[in-house]
Amino acid sequence: MGAWKKVTAAMVTGGVVAALIAVLLRPGAGSVDESSAVEGDTDLAAAAVAEIPAQGVYALSVAEVTPTGTRTATVGAPMEGTFEIGSVTKAVTGMLYADAVERGEVTPDTTLGEIFDFAETDSASITLEQLSQHRSGLPRLPTGLRTVLNSYRWLLLGQNPYRDEPADVVADVRSAAVGEQQPAYSNLGYAVLGHALAETTGEDYPQLVRTRLAEPMGLERFTVPAPGEGEASAEAVQGREASGRTQQAWDDAGYAPAGGIRADAQSMARLAEALLNGSAPGVAALDPTADFDAEARIGAGWITSEIQGRQITWHTGQTGGFYTWFGLDRERGTAVFISGATSHELEEAGLALLLQAGDTISEDTG
Amino acid sequence: MTGLLLLAAGIFWLGTMVEFTVAAWGAADRRRLVTAALAVLLAVTFARAVLAPSGLLVWTWVAGVGLFGAVAGQAVLRGRRLPWVVEGTSRWSIAASIVWALVLVVLLVAALRSFV
Image 1 (cartoon, rainbow over the protein chains, first blue to last red):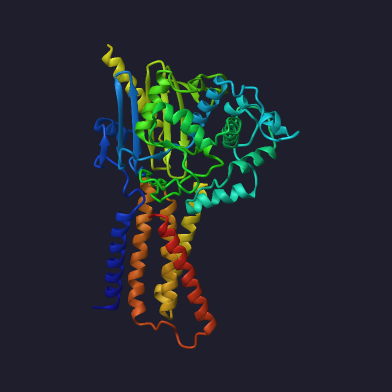
Image 2 (cartoon, helix red, strand yellow; image 1 turned 30 degrees about the horizontal axis):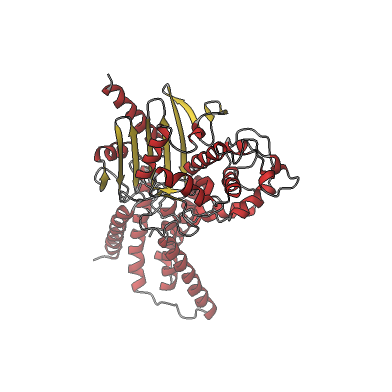
């Protein structure tokens, strides 16, 4: 065989073999689809899979509550699989705040200076209501080199960018530059709101979630994992970004009130049922009390938007390896929770499922 | 940020691929071929880690890996006829190659572990 023929044969062979391997290992390989293993309600699972991006979601948990019943399903994960609900935790912290107000433990006008030793700092005069409505003037996150380095650790290595203790969060708020008290989404604000409630009640944030929400409502798998324990439970689903790369659990204690809860579909369904029938502790958190932006109003963490003529109360959540949407149509008595092991947004999918649930009711009731 | 990462991944792959291609036809010893191949492997793994699974990007990555395989075919052919280290290479140069290869292997293993 001539030299050029040998080279051509070697290159073609190498190229074809490498390309075949690459096809098997390509980004998105292993994504859930119509053929993935389903547990729970197969119709709900099929409806959810039809709404999510075709590639890049590696496990799915979904719950739907309507006046005619509750359905839950998982795709590519066990039925008891727990997913990080990310910033949907803020809506839960809002419920804890509303519950503490109802109990008379705090008032909307209680200031951080009354709870923590903030002396004469700007942060001392921030009220709990301002924190609950994202209008405290606190930045989204503390500014500084540490925050930047943590962000790169997440982007490049898939590690948890939050490594703070509650005391670190309180110290960051104490030294923060407080801006204008206009609506501005703040993880820092919600983290300190949770710790302020913990300080007032004498229970730490995970205990508050357990004793005031999870246990009374019978939410079996609805917890704030201890730092480093986010993936320790057998039910913990592995978080992945859309490329398929694994992501470390976001399980630090400092920012737990802003995004630290793990839950399964059944627990989220029960939470939705309790929110819709008004029996959930702190359900007043859902009631909008202030404008958030031109298109939305806000209660204690919960956003309310008019979508296709309906008032949808909702929150999204994102961690390194999960995207979550939780929404309720309180007038119709419907709710949908959807969470996926992905960095793809699932907001549209969740909203579509919620609107479909409403359509079904309309057809049923004529 | 994602756009910057994609740009970085593209530049990384292109740079390492050019070096590997030059080495596949012009290397004097296997040492250069191996380090150049490891660098491309690291580049495609890094790209795999940051690429979202959208149609064009996915198939661009597959094509990139296929191109690497094609050049690797030529590198294997050439490597058969080459010594591991060409005569007269200084100890410092050999040591530097070993350290560089080890760095690439450590980074490659770390990148691969992020998929498990």
